[in-house]
Image 1 (cartoon, rainbow, N blue to C red):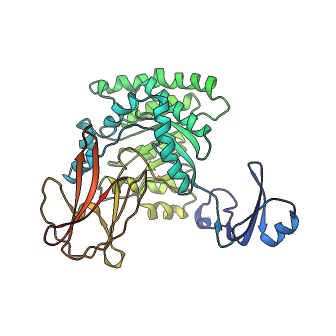
Image 2 (tube, rainbow, N blue to C red):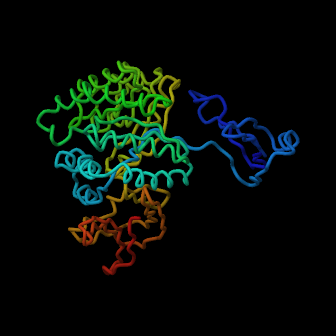
Image 3 (cartoon, helix red, strand yellow):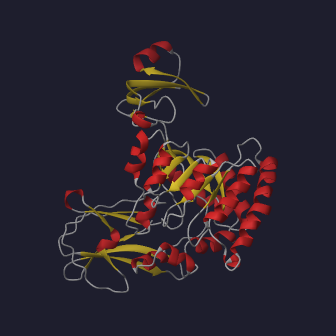
Length: 424
């Protein structure tokens, strides 16, 4: 197939870009490319390739940009259930770790995922993967981590491999049994760490050789955070994984700086993800490290956290001979997002604008807002302008089966309901 007459062909030639090379798109105006089988075998101008391959089947891309697909290096694609009810808890000011310690958060999704079959997990994940593909993502890292015991973690790994064989989105699996301390190990977290190191990781390697030997070994990841896995526990897991030949990743410095970024660089991790609380000294080290920095801006936004990954500092460190990736972090807590824009493009988080559904108090707005409401999994967007003194409410409702649903309600100055937008 010869794709020709693209207004621009973006080649991104030369592999991962570093330093001053960042942003070099390798643009060919009026570009063309030749695909044979599953390989791109030639690129150039349309005039050159049309003359060179006169008998190839053709696709006219006139007026379009032809570019490589997006790569999302951090997703939690396989899970059952949702955490819509936690939206109200966050509106009440509860933090991520407070929700987790109360048995919500990751642990809420674990309970639903443990009861799901491989077929159910694949069906749910395939819907999410299809949406990602439609929005331009063609390759994604995807994690287990909602089982927290061997059989459930294995079902998630099986689901990821099946999902990859379906075609479309190319999946690179990660084993994340160290996502949280399971409820049954709440009083003995070190015993769970020992189980991961002594039992799960060796068993995963044996299983992989018998069921997925043609593939590279999956990554092994750990959530290093207060309330999850300590620095020493994370080191124990990652060192055990490295000894078995697994490549390493880590959730680091999302809420507190425990030193995880520095440890990840020391252990040769492929990536260190989140980095919201990473120190300037560690950022400087990242600047000369082969470990990739991964930013997840949807996560603090979805959790109503005020701080984000210091991306500019990471890019500037030592001229940044390092690579910086942006990731989506799709998971069960990111079912609803609302972006609010004030005059002059000022960003306003939904929590600045909404009263709690249990307060039901008018919250006059002094800006003219243009909200964009969207679901992260089944995405929809609706734009409207709210006159001054209108206000919005995020409401959590329950159906007959006790399933939580989130909607965004817009009220007028006199308290009249103007619009209700349901999360998809």
